Image 1: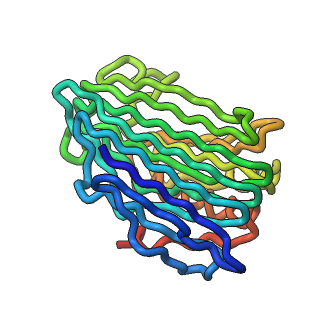
Image 2: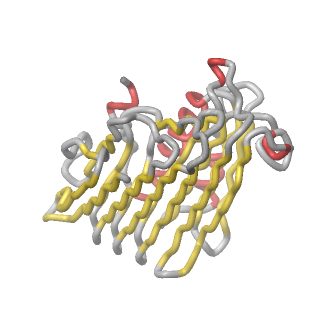
Length: 272
């Protein structure tokens, strides 16, 4: 069991990491301010570097009113093969009025035989903004491994003022027909989803995002803006996590100025 609880607050013109507590092997490095005091960049560290069967991780992050926090990870997350016990990760994010939280982790590699439960819950106040993404790599393709056994349970729920604006559940079973079906992953080993909600999302932003094409040949991608919910959804299917990440960064560079009035600045750790 490991847990991490963070609270970001606004002090004058700065966002600070006002509170942090942890249990077990979950940590954060000191806050970074590569784009000025208004945005707090934070690296989430899991020293074991992988999640084994029976592990349970819980990360809670709160951005109070007008605070702006960007959370990322130093490298790929890994879910290892399990003989029987399930492993779990729960993300709980809360954003106060006028606050912003960006959850931009690096890719997640799910080993063949892993039993993984991944839950993300986001609670937003009025005029709060959220941008988040997740990239799943099924098996270790470079090593010739595919996702032939095991399972992944997925749950993502976003609420604004207590009302759900996005709810998604999924079950991916290793070796199942869904992984090959056109209604599922269409035979691809990498799937990525970007979700953005807040002010500034409109048809022009959606059109600009749709102009971004993936560098990977034969990769599939699509975007939609949900009516009356102000939720933009972007999907990617391919075999290259690097290409998926590059595509989502290109979208982020468009979304950030439109939603937040701020140019996108990539965390330095992404280039190491």
